[in-house]
Length: 467
Image (cartoon, rainbow, N blue to C red):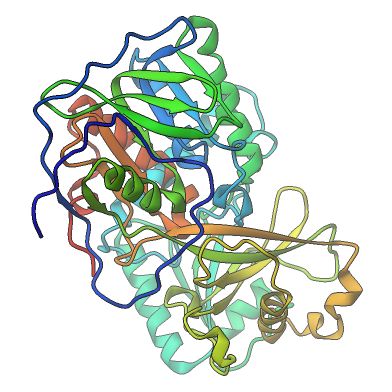
């Protein structure tokens, strides 16, 4: 393709949630960039009294964006603004189960070190709360549940033996449970001779809403020092390009104000990140593609549910590969719907059952057929639930629906955007945003400040090829 010329307009891209188209093509995706900057252009007007100036501006107030803000505030003297078209925790973060489990993670995989680092940082946060005389369950919804990855076939049993060994060798306390051992730990779980599990007794979970509230409270302590501000319910309308030779972005224009950035702009907009960046570059006469796209999920929450004894967090072995459901109607082709059993009790005593994954663009409508698939699947593991119908639970049930930011290669994008000297991405964690949040935040801050990191950022660079 020909090199694209950067247009003279300084302002582009509507960041409100109106980008509902989704391409489901199977062609090769890539994070690509082809452009050059114009040598001329009008200088931008000086900021007005209504404009705000910060060192760092973060787009997106999910767990990633808020954690990045927290890390900058704690680990530097930089000022931070965070902006979102809605409220915090209103996207994928608030719709999830909140588990920080490592059972389904694979040692040596591209995200392993990042997940491990985040796990350590979450544990440190909980320990620090206890040292301060605070209850991590109250502040974070923190529960040390342990996790079980459950298999029901001989092949899955063999896989789980290997996985338990790998996890143990990677430094975690891990154990393979035979059918007899498993039935003792989870009496309500259907166990036959081929049922087994990999068990991690130290795995924990959080309540996303409590955790976000805690992080926000900590961030807001810096507001009185002039180092932190939130701009919620304030959609970003465009970026304003700077005039320097590095081709950076000088400010973020919202619907109500202009936020100038002296150091860095972090885009942590979850599943909207790909379409936002694509539109931004297109409107500047440039091409840029980050294949982050929404992967919808349903989660069933049963309030004050006492009909099932659950001692740990559970996940079926098939969750690792997300096998698609066969036999869907022809009109559903392309959804690639998968349902895997996950079950846990949260800090409020609610039974959380999941989960589904499907590609339906940015649609967040409730699909009762997916809830039926989830209920049927969990009933295969817990016979006590088979005698209950969903209609019996109408008064106690809630359904959480979120859009996971999916990346084709399973790795988030974390790092600078080529050609824009001060713009960075932190997105594409799919269902692992909470579990990788603190490690991602640490990585972003290290990259922006040019410091060596605890985890290698190379696997997550923005300009990598993705199949």
